[in-house]
Length: 151
Image (cartoon, rainbow, N blue to C red; front, side, top):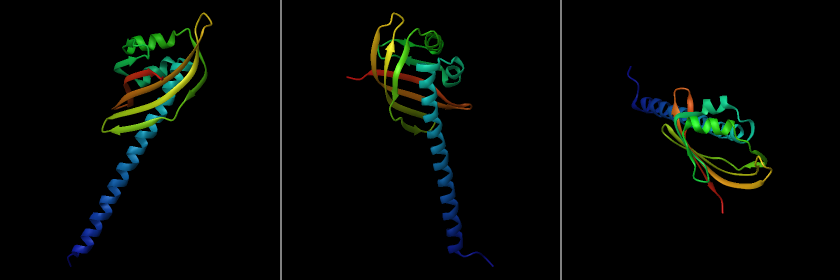
């Protein structure tokens, strides 16, 4: 006996819904990973200065732009973050927005802190930070970062 058209349609609909749910799950997993990466990177830059975290999250062709206009490649950024003489107090990291399109992800957030320079000068920071990530075999890697001073 041959299956009815209705049975075949039901099976196709169930299969389609299952595939859609897997896709949504993968998307939310990627969003969760990008959110975690953004927070880990923030802590490594403005807190721990952990070179292993920077090495794990920075892509090979990183373009790292500071709010003052200074541009750094991967090697320069890691070196300058690890050897930064400033400390940061009263840090806040606003909610992180995440967008994903294929193998490209974008995170955006606001950051405020007081930067205490080596000479003791305190500089208030209020930044918008945009980060572009690319999906690689070993996870999401930072491809570009741009910080802009808030008015």
